[in-house]
Length: 56
Image (cartoon, rainbow, N blue to C red):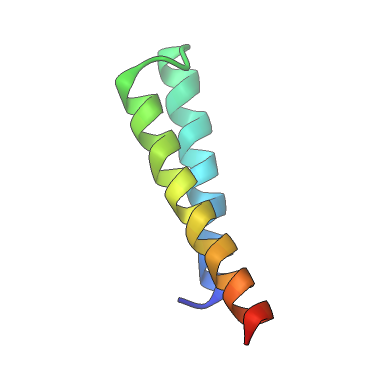
């Protein structure tokens, strides 16, 4: 996946995480934790893509 696409998805996921956290007013709510996992996965994908470009 293109890094620019991933950056856009990361920003969308970050904003969604913020909205969910504000809605439930808790970092421990299951939906907040689930969205945090989604965001972490996207960040990991982005980092792997960047490392892959450096290695090639």
